[in-house]
Length: 301
Image (cartoon, rainbow, N blue to C red; front, side, top):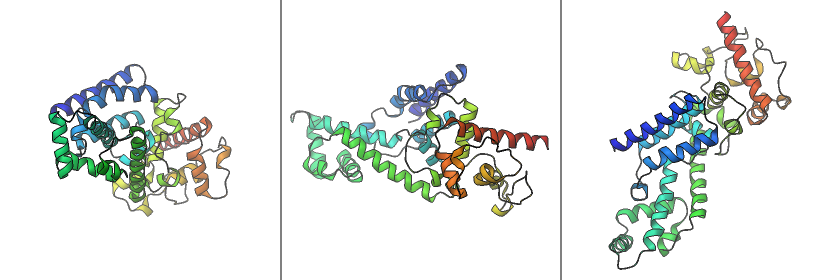
């Protein structure tokens, strides 16, 4: 409802405002604030209605993630979800529904709630019909048919596997994530996200590069309506398309004296994978330094 959306937006705004006041939160603190301040609002009574899609809840979820990563609103949702590693709102609601399932099964047969539950289960209507769909999606068909208690810890893992597969399929079909899917294969928070050694500006640069929205010509030209072959590098005279590989490994106008050892590979694609997968702070600083060089050269010109 609108009141829930307004309350969640206020909670989100409060977190972002406080984050700016203290110079930013680390990953663990930010996650804790989100789980404590926003989730209880958007997940209220989700054990009852959790099977329904909610664009408003998803919007709040993505706004909170974008604020932490420092990326703009046109960044692909699949990319920012993969970088942050948070459970999706629908995943949380499925778990809440499983808890409600166990609670209803634990009720005495004389309770009205249990009577309604038994009727809906027998006729596969109402909430039980939605719960059956949830169980079917995550491979728990026997739980519904046998009308037995659900092991929540195993159910959570099954949900994570289901939504992880769904996320993997999504990044494979999005053209904007052409580079992202080369080095990102698991749904989990990245080490640079959890690092306390990066400031917000550095974290934002890495997140933009990984998610394919760093303002290189390959991305800027898309908004300008240029064909891909016309999105060439403005710094060197090679007429190469300025994509992530060109920026990180090939542009001759950028100084790479401090390049990390991890990119001394034979193939460019292997170098990209190693650089994006390297958890060492030196690799992160290398990328940030390259972007600073590029910006300074373009500004001086």
